[in-house]
Every structure is written in structure tokens, then in C-alpha cells.
Length: 231
Image 1 (cartoon, rainbow, N blue to C red):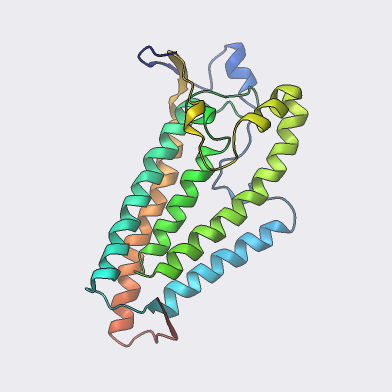
Image 2: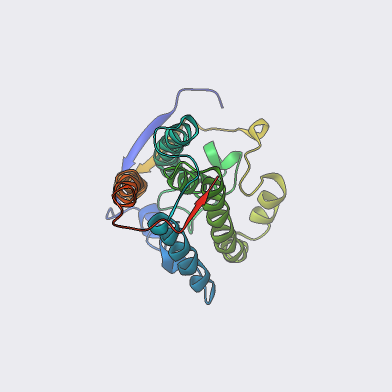
């Protein structure tokens, strides 16, 4: 449908049937608790590895070098795309994932756009060190972690939505958008608290910028040793 998009605001504490159905929700994509079983250990190990790289790793190109600065700027762009992309997705899915099958807007071209934007944000975090290798590694680690989450979620959503979700699985890719399938609606009901929460949670990615700068300063000052440099 090609009309202009209208928004209807709703609050999750309302008395409507839809609001009641929305009370049973899957966790936010950034919630560690959403990762099942021992896979949570993989996630925590991945976080520790990325943290270790921030502390004792550095780019092959020093701060001020064209490549280093270019990747930092690219990372900033990816982080802002992540923040606004996740917030945009939340307009459609916020509070609905476990109660209804959302297949419009960003969910018409990608089954997991919230996760896809989070992967871009993770790559943006890695790019703050000015390294091609670290940028790619951060994005890949995030992709593996979210893939594990998605596989479990798909089993759950099949049990909830049945054949409708099986058909959705066949038509729409997991992460890489198929833009030719874009489909929208004229009006969507927005749970403003959920959208706000997603925006605030996504802004955590911005912390990577001052943290990376702080560690680079400490490394340049000799306070923290640089154990390895990556291109």
C-alpha cells in the first residue's frame, strides 16, 4: 500500500485486547537472557574477546592516518544507522513479536531487521579502533551470536504461528534484505514506551567512541601496553 504512514500511539498498560496479548513478549535482541543454554557462554566469551582487543589491541595504522580515521568515521556512521534502524523497526514490532506475525515495513524484506541493524552497530564498534580486521571480526561475532538466537526464535515462532510463519520463512531472508518484497501499511499502532526503550538501549553503541578514544590515549601514553596490531 502506498499511502502515507499514519501512527497510532498505544500504551502497554491499556485495557484493550491487543495490549493484553502484548504482555507476553520475547526479550529485546540485546538481552543476554535471550540466548539459550550454553550458547550464552559463547556470547560472553565473544564479548570478553572484543573487550580484550579494545584493551591491548590496536590498529596497524596510527591515529591520524587516513585509513585509521576513515574506519573510525565509517564506524560512527554504522552506529547511527544501527540506532535509527533499530528504532524504526521497533515502530512495527515493539511489543508484538510473540502475539502477532509482523510482515510489513522492514519485516517485509528481512525477518530479523533489529538483529541486522545490531550487527552493523557491532561492526561500527569494532571500527572505532581504526582496523579493517577488527571491524570485520566484530561484525562476524555479532552475526554468529544473533544467528544462534534466531534459530531458537524460529522454532518458537513456528509453534506460535504455524504455517503462516513457515510461509514467511520461505519468502523473506533472515538478515540480508530482499528489497523487491517491500510492503507497507497506511497505519501502524505504536507502543511508544517500547520504541523509546529500544532507542535508549541502542544508544549504548555510542559508548564505543569515547571508550576507544580513552584506550588509545592510555596506549599512546604507555599506561596500557599494545600486545598486537592488526591491519
